[in-house]
Amino acid sequence: MRACNLMGAIGLLITLQIAVVQAADVAQPVPPFAVPLAADGVQRATITLDSYSYTPNHVIVEAGKPVELTLTSVTTITPHNFIIKELSVEQDVSAGKTVVIKFTPTQTGTFPIYCDKRLWPLPSHRDKGMEGKLEVK
Ligand SMILES: [Cu+2]
Image 1 (spheres, rainbow, N blue to C red):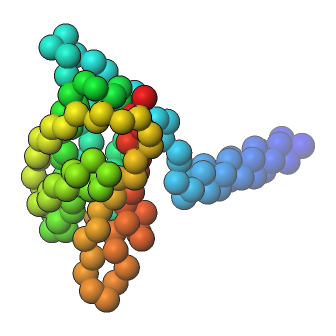
Image 2: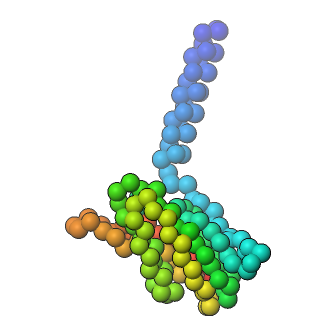
Image 3: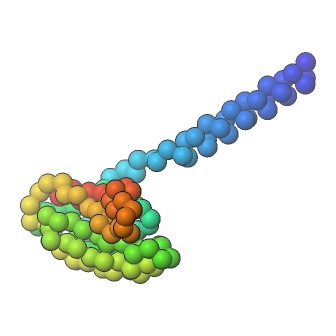
């Protein structure tokens, strides 16, 4: 009887571990990040660039106030960039480097962020999931 319970417990543990592994395999949605307004009136946030992602990948800012984004690449070889076409933002970020960009969004809306780097003939980084959005309220 005891052995039976033990086997049942082991079976449950194995099932739980499989469930955890499966959950980790699925990309977890990252909640939108509302960029805080600093005392000097600047909206500051740090975005991490990796292959092939931005973290956070959905940032919310207020219109009419300056935005300062610190773009930090954590890759060792692959260069990336950070493009918001509608706001004329286009910034290269070399592997392992950090770049600070500043802009002031004037119109509200949701604008795509993406990396258009690609190693021909492979798909672009954006096609590999390196995209996000800037929401201006
Ligand atoms: Cu990229």
